[in-house]
Length: 119
Image (cartoon, rainbow, N blue to C red; front, side, top):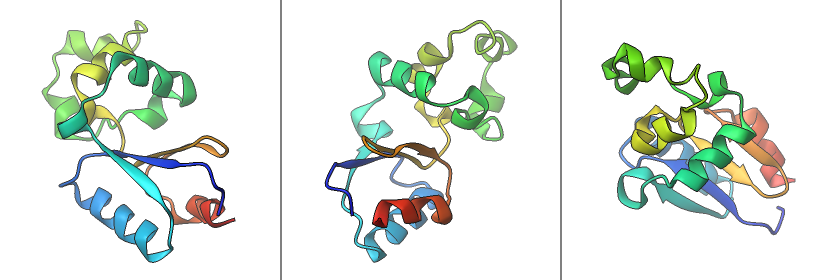
């Protein structure tokens, strides 16, 4: 296991997040959990996420949060204002989102890609 710290971003009560945490725990992966509902999503962190991942990978456009946005808010993604949008609406970020300083970012539930964490 790499020695750098893995950070898991998401919302504690999300079923996919619970499944992710169970997988990480079962495989002995050490991580810090950043809960958007408790810790928020700063503008700086939102910008880092936008720079690291393609927008279609980063955003969950199938969820209720996206569907509740106005057409103008949804269009702001195409106008380069994604960081501000996800900072204000962290539930728009696909879950789980893992970040490892040496391995980069992984969005979505993907056990195959997570095996790299055990390397």
